[in-house]
Every structure is written in structure tokens, then in C-alpha cells.
Length: 240
Image 1 (spheres, rainbow, N blue to C red):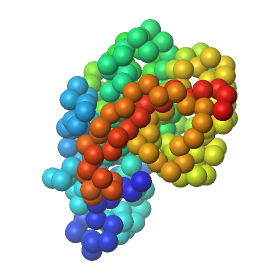
Image 2 (spheres, rainbow, N blue to C red):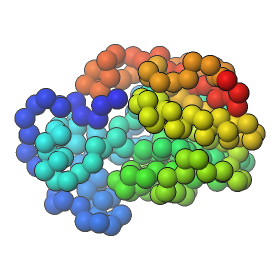
Image 3 (cartoon, helix red, strand yellow):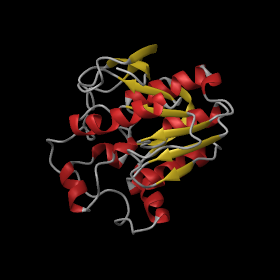
Image 4 (cartoon, helix red, strand yellow):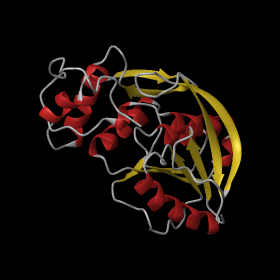
């Protein structure tokens, strides 16, 4: 997984606005100035602040970001796994309706927003990136839904009260997958419904998965190695 379509190009000039201060409001102002409120393919119901081909973040390079001491803007892109989970939840609201849902490694919050739209009783987005947290707030407001945010690293913790976990595109790095999957399996053993959206990343588990749906998710060759990624929504089982 990459984050910028122009990793090898020279800097194209400053992003819009001064470097954001250390507050959620400042980060949200930066996000609004450098993204576009739009929708992603497969999810016309969900408005998101995204990097698009007409926004400064789309054109930004690693050099641009480093010069402003900004982290990679993963939150500014609707990755295939998250989109597939969101689509599946919207098409099957009974999975989350009236239930308490955790959107893990939420990014911009697309899966959690879908769960809220589908009638979840409570949605908590777990995200440790400050800009992603700011983005979740903007995106939730744009969709007229309420999402709580947990800003701490919850991996390994029990999740009392959580009935559904949504996890999109979390298996793109081995250290992350090796840490997350055993924890999610433990939650599944405790009766939590764990939905894993994956477009064929290298480190998705090979066993202990039940396929629920497959989607052809349009992508960009600037971000992925294919224009369409076949993405599976799996139920992660408590046993391998």
C-alpha cells in the first residue's frame, strides 16, 4: 500500500494553508483546504474528504509532506478493503443494526460511517493518527452520523460490549498483520463478529476465514497495481 501518486516526482509547491497547529480544529481546517468532499466508487451514499486529482494532497510528494512535518495521509484515500466492508454493511444492515460496532484502524472512518448509516447502536472508530481522527470528525459530520473515537492503541485489549469489528485493509504489512490477526481471532472466539476486508494483500491469513462477499473495487494505478481490485469481505473465525 502506498499513499501518494507522485512518490518519484519533484515537489510541486506548498500545500494549501499554513502548517496545522496541534489541535483537532487546525487539522480539520488543513484537511478541508487540501481535500475535496466527494464520494468513492462503490459508495455513492458516503461523503468523504478525499485526496483527488484536483486537490493539493493528491499532488503532494513525500518531500512536500516531510518539509511540513506531516505524516503520510492514508486517511485521505478510500482503500479497497474499507470500501468493500462499507458496501457489505450497507447492503446487509442486519449485520450491525442495533449493535455496538468498532471500526478498527479506521482511517477516514468509511466503514464506521457505513455502520452508523445502517443503524448501528454505537460506532467507535479506533485510530491513533491525529489527522485521521480529525478526518473522521469531518466525515461523520458530512454524513450526519455520530461516531466516537478511541485514540489509543487497543490491540490486545478485550473489547467489552463490542459486538462487531470492521477491519479494512489491515494486512498490507507483516508486522501489523502478525500483531492484529491473533487479537481479532481472540475477539471472534468471544463471540464478536469480525469482518475483514482485503483486496489480496500479501499477509491476509490463509486459513480461518469464511468468505461473505466479493466486490470489484475500482482503484487508480497511481495508488494500486490494478485498475480493479477484487476485494473479499471475510468473516474472521476464532479458530484457524
